[in-house]
Image 1 (cartoon, protein in one colour):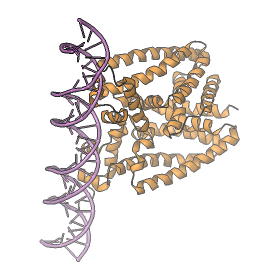
Image 2: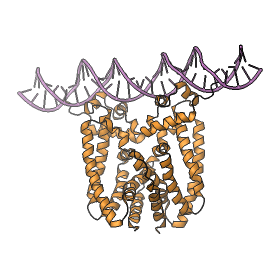
Image 3: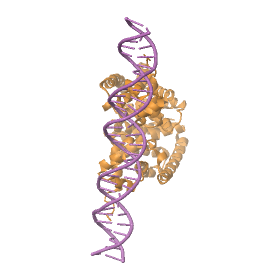
Image 4: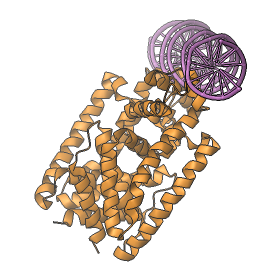
Length: 192
Length: 192
DNA sequence: TTCTCTCTAGAGAGCAGACTCTAGAGAGCG
DNA sequence: CGCTCTCTAGAGTCTGCTCTCTAGAGAGAA
């Protein structure tokens, strides 16, 4: 049989390209068919419906992002937080299309409609990620005395915010941004 | 004549409600007709097309937001920056529906398709806003020595990021967030 | 070679949304 | 009271998207 004439990842790449050019709603099956130059039969052979495609886009992007960050949690909390912020920016700079997926947020991918398989895959990764974050926050609280909301804001939300300014304006992320983000995080976590 | 049986702002309110419940693409004419319980004739009598409706939603939300912040630019730069961050959070807390408009970003409202009138109205306000920001940044650079990218990140992007965490998760913004944001801004602008 | 089973192509049904069009309701004016 | 002109109601058209269905291409097994 013509074993996988089209690569599934090429279909997801096309979907992500559509996302980067618009909103997550710009990911339509019809659009992917055009962008990836495949037939609807090929798409529906892989994904039972649009929700499953969206799920695959999300899970692939977030999975890749998390996989790259997990090693950074080892070590001293403040250093880990700084590395996390720095690497978040550099990952987005290296993967701007996938960065759009993260910035759009899970909610934009209609998780309620996902097939059970996609959902449980996501929940498994999410649980693992949450546990890492929980431990980091605990470590940072004892190390710095800051409250949880402040830590989450500075360590997790701030790097995204830094990236959003550039991607949202259609500009490339400057290399200097990594250093700025790391410096802000360190300043904040150092402040008594 | 039955002078304005329906209020135009009620139509915009319905549109904003749809946005808060989904993405900006959830603002459909058909959806607004249902949500506001008006006829398509009434909607099209006010807005020539969907783009004009989106423009009105954006301009109303951003106009209200900016109007509330303009007075804060007066005075000493660091204090102004702190007030700006604090007020951004409190405005979003008081106007969560309109906050969704800001968080979605101009790009999601398809400004390329706007009628000329809406576009120039936006550009006028944007120019005024940019000028205020430019002056504030200049003041902060001389006062603190920080670079532009860092100032924009901390003063403008950080408050949005703080708000996004709560709205994105469907939670109310806690009152304590204002203080956290202001403190982070002050800490950052104090760091030599 | 022939058979099988996976994968692909693409037509078409069904549906939702943007927008158009026409009839008419009714406030204000004379 | 009747006329006008704005605003409203809602049916209807058209476009585009999701998803289904069927025919068939072709690798690998026998």
